Amino acid sequence: MTMLDLKRPSPRRPDGEGSVQVQMDPSLQIDSAKVFAVYGKGGIGKSTTSSNLSVAFSKLGKKVLQIGCDPKHDSTFTLTKRLAPTVIDVLESVDFHSEELRPEDYMFEGYNGVMCVEAGGPPAGTGCGGYVVGQTVKLLKEHHLLDDADIVIFDVLGDVVCGGFASPLQHAHRGVVVAANDFDSIFAMNRIVSAISAKSKNYEVRLGGVIANRSKATDEIDRFCDATGLRRLAHFPDLDAIRLSRLKKRTLFEMDSEDPEVAAVQQEYLRLAASLLAGVEPCAATAMKDREIFDFLGFD
Image (tube, rainbow, N blue to C red; front, side):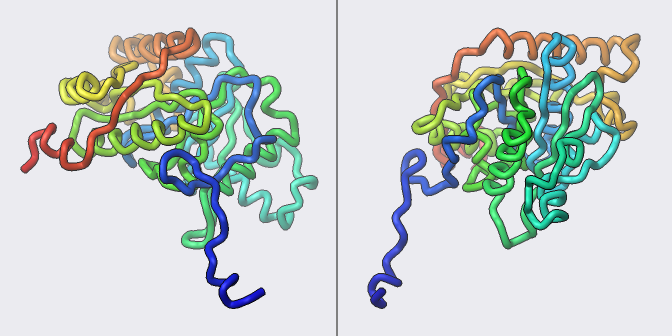
């Protein structure tokens, strides 16, 4: 090998327009389940939304698997009442010899039969989230744990739509965004819309819509939807009962249904789950440029 060969960049396959993101092994496709990937600004309530949506699907008689894709590994906290060990942790404990693992080492049953897996994350600064997601799906397939699932929900770290943490979109049928009625959430949503659009060029994933969360009003979200072609799928207001449920390690379906506000939120989750089961048409949304969205939302 010559010095010239060493300097040549290794060939990379395109993934979306102008992208060099993590590629999915074709053998690791999730075939039998409907798969949803949930994205949104950090701290916007994706895990709360994902967990309650998982329960709503289970209340409709579906077998649900929720996969947390965050190093904090707290996606399934209210479902299992614990911080479950991550796939990466248990793989490391057996020196990455996956044949030594049993399903009960990394999969845990949560409220109403929702099955829960925490993918975890690589050590900071040393690895890729896409590898973690890939290893998780590989392990689930090796143990045939995806065969009986009707629904798979990926709850994905923050609004990181680069490289590895966009990899759940390679498995998903619909990408769903969680956003509040404020500038930061909508700005992040705009970036996620762009990411899903890029992934849709090479994969089955399509944009499903936005879930308005932690917001009394939805006027700014609705304006953005009208301008870009997005769709609002549901609205969950900023209620103390929702915050309290997480502090009590409970899903909203375990809270007092005699409280009319709680009952209304439970019904909204059930309605959302039913609509996603029925199949939402993909949104042909077009993301704005950064300068456009600043102007659109009224910032100088």
